[in-house]
Image (cartoon, rainbow, N blue to C red):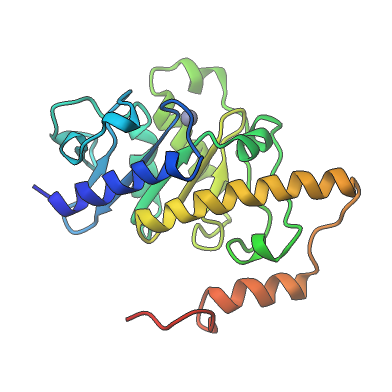
Length: 232
Ligand SMILES: [Zn+2]
């Protein structure tokens, strides 16, 4: 069932190593069918070169496996938590891309220094708090990872900020489709790399002027957007 959804998740997973975002098997992508409440995700520990569309696992929003011979990615509960909390998203991507992960490990948000960043985010890319010992060892680590992301978004709109850095861990990104979530994952890695280079050139660099941020963010997002072609 849901062959198209599995294909979409499969293509997104393959795109991650192609974009240089993944080493070994550190990452995963998922796509959801909102009418059925079922999402498609990479199986656990399968090398990208060996992955087939039929390996993709289907999971419902209660966490039950609906279809698939293999075990789903160990990060599946984090994806499920995000799909449950953020009603408008259709896909989630997780990578350990180096520059974004460097910020996550340092527990630093990625400061918004330029228009590349402002094309995707309405401010700094947020970082979560550290996980507690109970959250780490209590038997639901991946679900709790989702919980600390959702907690970070209590006052943030996931549409304005389509990614987060999990403290000591790495980025999660999302979008209306899983293909969009892949694009955001590529953008986050570029933005992180450029932010580090900007800081090495100018350690006291201030964040972008609010008018320039608003100009770039709003021409691509929201009711006044005019960048690109109208959606068909
Ligand atoms: Zn991870």
